[in-house]
Image (cartoon, helix red, strand yellow):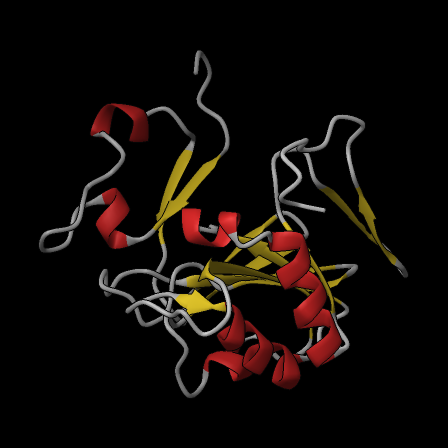
Length: 190
């Protein structure tokens, strides 16, 4: 942070604070990038050749938003934390890759979050080429995310993988999942 460069993009609650939420990034740290952008659902921001579009969510923090990344290789969607609601799938129509925060397995949903069965409903409507599950809670991790991903693929036909540190996805005409040489050895991703 010795030079002002880059863009920090966040929600109102993260950047300024809203009600009982935030701010989560100090004014000091917000002074370091060249630009700070406060984004809201329905808003957008162009970052070079990528257009970011904020999508609606239903979460305890009303400023939370999902994201769509419009790239030359196609649309990438990210749900962020949200519960399933009418219109969620519409927000991500046309996504080649859908990254989803899936806190619990099966139909074990908790308020403000998606579970695996919600992801199945979402994938059946969005029909991306690849789904990546993130933000899996401890109950999900004990349930073996690899097995849950296989169940989701069997029900939707969409290739589904649990995300983890080091996972790499190459998006071109073909989408490739590249697992690092040292991938998790806990057996839970098998």
